[in-house]
Amino acid sequence: MALTNILLLSQIAGYVIALILSLCIIVPMSLQQDDFKGHCLLFSTGEWQETDGQLAIHWSSQGYCNYTIFVGVALFLVSAVQIYRLSIFMYKGTDSSFLSTFIDVITGIWICGMTFIAACMITFGFMAWCENMTERFPSCELAAGQDIDHKDGINTKNFYIELGTAQFGIWGSFATWVGLSVCALLKLCRYHQLENIRVSMYRERQRLINENADSPGNSLGRESNSTESTATAE
Image (cartoon, rainbow, N blue to C red; front, top):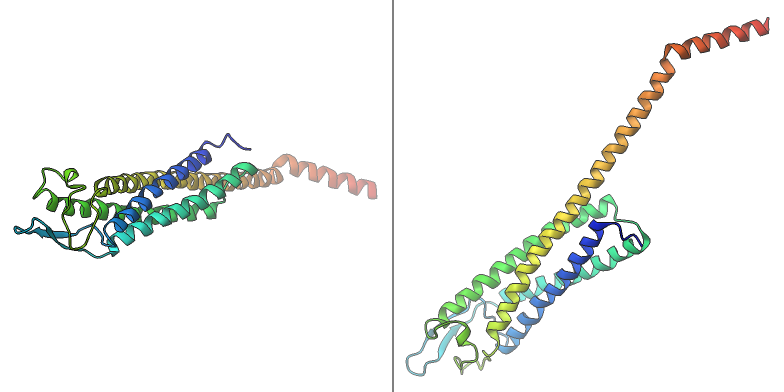
């Protein structure tokens, strides 16, 4: 097992961290939708009723929560595949090819973009919800567990912890995938450098062979051999 490949070990460790962080997105966001009876908290707004103190909520699209869960599932699957693939390379003492490393770079950049969008959705969507909560409560955290919406029958007990965990998971995932993309890019640059070295060595070898073939000593040697062959023939 090739334990000397520090870059490969770093990638495996990074994908393990990314796998764990993806669960910090999937689980709390799924629980939040379950607690809110299928409604998405992100970017939901409302007005507090003076008569009964309830919040008349204007629920946002479920697409916000569904997208973040989708990103979490995508991160989980890609991380699991990469851990399995790189573990095989580690066991065999080999490494990925230039093509697969190039695909890793493109995949990493694509996932970073998706994760950044999901992170902005969770952060700003949660801020929009908390703005409503702080109109009545001293802080958004203190609104957790309060009976604010009889009509929809939502359970607000754990929403602050759930969204806080999701924020940690999504921003942690973004930072981790940026690091993984940089590792893949470094490996790609190393492959490109090695290829340039091979080409340069080949050209230098060909140049030396041509110089030896055209050198005066070799010409005299060839002429001497030709003269000896002629004399022997006579």
